[in-house]
Length: 205
Image (cartoon, rainbow, N blue to C red):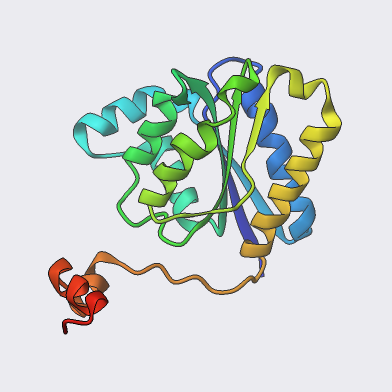
């Protein structure tokens, strides 16, 4: 069975360190999964105008619709953003803003980011993980941040890439099935009032 991995790169320059990291992560995942893996790359820079239109109209067409379909059908994602103002870029966020709700439910995702200095490395945990948690994706434990200097001291970066790629490959390649509880399931089960939970905890119920 062919596994589908999609790389989403939000680099703005050409060439781009963001795209360089994205390509290395994607290649590492394919190496772990084997030859029966399909790898697609979604470059957001050429989709900037279409993303702005979709944000306003709520409708995606052309290349943007194709990119959304790739993400929808992917078994796993690699997402990489440059750091702007200590967070992900607006282009990166807009792409995920215009995805249909539920597209990323339970989908394994490898998080990556690039910046000029290592001072921005916390962006993975402070910005990207909360975003993909909200989208009900399953972010692998190891995120990969690469500052400009990291591309020169390759041994450490290569080790982090290999570890993160292995974690994504384990999930994509037949790891334990993941079930994400939907809002509808929560409503059907019925929410327990906070006062009742307190009463149970105190032994008053």
